[in-house]
Length: 407
Image (tube, rainbow, N blue to C red; front, side, top):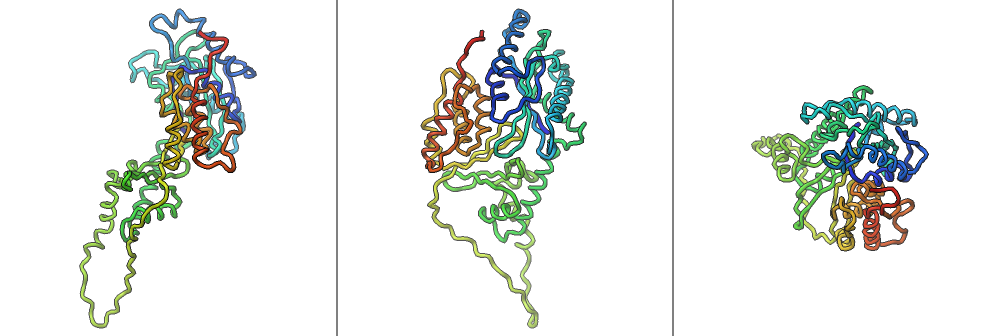
């Protein structure tokens, strides 16, 4: 299990995304009714902050006034879980989150503990539409009921430490240990494939790894030279720079690694056969002749909404150009960058609707573009689909207009 946390200023959009997202379920609320709208939840949080306004703004305004947390166990760890088990996970995580002491590292007494248990928060359960992996979203008021600010220094490390502690208590494998084991297994398989290859060729290398059960994505430059690649194992993606001792499987080193594995064969002296010795037949595999590649250029991207959810995307170059020409950054969204809009559009193109919604919400979006039931038409060509994805991304990354309560 892993977790991530950060403090944000677009709390209304965050709660709306957590609660209103398609098929989202409220797991629990704390110091909030569970039968009110996301807007009403945020209004109550703001009302508490207004109550302690003088205390909060004594030195500088509290601009990032919400804590946003995502807790992601593996599908194996939560298989067949009931809502009560998700509630216990939320309670356990918040308890350990509050207990993490970061005062020594941050050199601040306020980082000794947080007090989410006495803060307003809502916990929602999400299911990724493609992978089916379930995870928790926790949106908490930055202040507790007594007006004390929950410290945010090294909050990412606080979340990871809490996840590790909960996983240890439940006998789950540590996320870093799982990642290390996966990298070791992939490295061994890559070296095994290289050892069996009579010569090095990217096409043959990719084909052999695919037959082993991996999904391999090559990244080439404009001249067709492979500059990088990634290997997908389960729901995790590992870059070649993360594999092998001394990064020996990177494109710049992999042919040298192949040569080292075949060093003895290459330097083995050729003995003169005796008269009656029958020589074994040696099968030679001819190197493939280069052929003209008339297929459309494909661009590959690896996007992540967090350390656990990864989304590989292949998109034709001409479709990417359509997206780039039609995306626009809303002037009212001070948090978003044009790259966020592009990323949202590309994820929509690949039909990763949940991931696109997450990226839009993280960038402060939420002003339009309901995605429920939205998708590609049956007879829609790729260029038209790319244009429509760009338009939808523009709407999704537009901030919601303030209505009613606000300051």
